[in-house]
Image 1: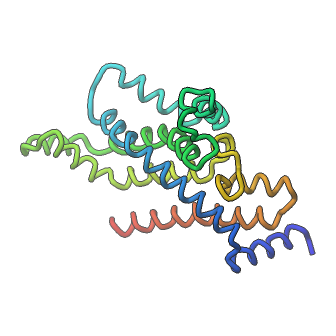
Image 2: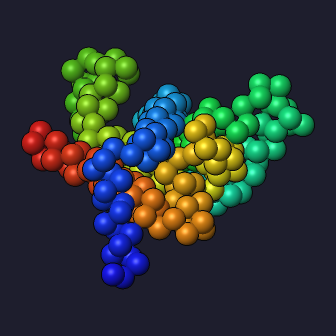
Length: 230
């Protein structure tokens, strides 16, 4: 039997039998990615609202910076955060390096430009006449913003989804800040890299199936929900 086919069969068996290591790695990946994305949303969504709905000096430059940072190399970001979180760094006192919290911090920083840029685009795509109509009817600034946000809801959801997918499939930051410690900071991407180097193709394929399956399932679910609401 071809090694690849044999690896796929073994991978399916690991998933169907509920292998503890496989699912613990998947659970940690899901946890750090969800928390990291939600953490980034706490400042990214307000920033996007300000960029899209307010006028201020330097707005165009700030939008350009966020767009540029979407493509930041993850190893570079990981290095800078490593220097901040290491014992000799300014945040070394908190002993966050090589913990799940360090990965969460790294992923939240990584996806911030994605959420800000995509959410800003979604909010700016709303018909400006809608804001004018809301103000004409006596709506306050906050009420007007709420109307625009409601109209751009699915655009915001897709921005958050894109950020989650980036975080969930990310390798560089997770490796540099988490250290790929078994049972503590090993996530799907770092585990796939390690097991492939070790020659454990079956485990690598099993983990890749879960990685791809979760990302694709979430994307399909969001698209179906969007079509249903229209």
